[in-house]
Image (cartoon, rainbow, N blue to C red; front, side, top):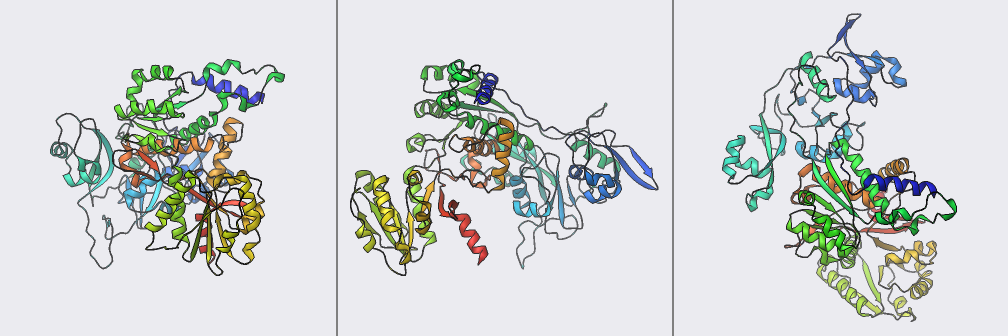
Length: 640
């Protein structure tokens, strides 16, 4: 407990009122890469190993294989260490492009640049992320700037690349192919025509990379400009050019000049993170007298500290893909006077993204400010639909309860073809409202699923005999129960627990049931399903890596209940989007996806409202633990 309190004190002191963080990729340095020695008639680069380098990263830099290095340096098989000398065989590369090297093995070689992600690279070459990982088995979870990837492609003849090949047709080769994109901020009086002339591109190319232009060009708008090069021109790479590519990868600076320094400068984004840290109460936390230390949960300052810690881990992760941000952390709770002071700071007008505040009253104030200043803002925890009404800048992470029920109905429609649906509720106004929603949803889906719903109203202490009489032998009996009354639910389960021997029952209940004193074996027998806005699969390798990193950095266990996973996922998703597309990332989310830890983000918007996440985790009990039903279905299909 003492250690945790001290850690909090250190973290809070380091925050003060804002934190400026500018990340740049830390790259190892090669000494004298242009020195070539001849040993026994063979030419070698002499490479001095730097801290954090691996045999794989060195092999990627010199365009050789790990086996090439280990063959000439047998000791490298046991590992390498800083200042170790390695002999790297000089391999001549002929007829290859400088940035996209086409060889006779049906691959393009792509060197990862600042702000590139695996998703973006897959879109560029019209392949899937899985395709890239298959031919790059040692690729980590997140690509590193300077790393060289093999990209599978379909060749026609030397110097050409087929785009979208169609069977039995002659592929058409484009005259120009973009090597990269850079961002341009639209100035006053600029037009589509003037931009095409300025950058020597066509209107078709401009619209292709900027779908938002269909609504017109606007002053201050950020757009993508493709940098084009003639296709079919092969560049021979001699030893000098190869050395320059290596220098570029490892960020080597010559005394006279930087070679191949053509990269567009990365944009630095301003991000505000607004959390209730209660800094004014931090002095009340006693860390010197062990007898006076309370449980961490008793201090307000600990309430959302794991959200902050998870968010910061996402920032650490994204530095590997070239993220550059200034992060401003503000202590925002329900004190509106203090909040108005923060919003009056000139720096707030320069924000590219705002995360929080967490409390509804404060969020309403900041969301109005965000709308006035055209800044996207994230609400992490509230399911209230009113927060996105008439404000296109707001992103709401948690689906409303009504939206969650709709997703459950869609799952049932998609998963059950022989369903006998029984809807049980207590007749209250609230449960009647949700019952009508469920019935209307199934009526909408009647073309593919027409169950003929049986609606049964049971009082909290009433009998469930009518429910039992509604079951049908030989059908999938889908029992949806809206009640949260613990007494009723316990009695309900007690009457149902032995019916599985006669009937095929699928019980759908409320998330709160997990907190009730129900034996898991009964829920297993009834194939109990529920729905959760947050669910963590602790068998997932990405979750395991996150937990390891969190423990190592913060010396404590990350918790879903304390919002560590939520902080990480929100940081990872929105900072990735900001890094890839700029502050107008909301225009490109249909083409964007990130593997998250506790849910998925599937944002939809209507009219002038903001974005609401439509995704809900649907889980059921399997082997005495909750399992994502979508993963369970995939497992069953593989077994078949």
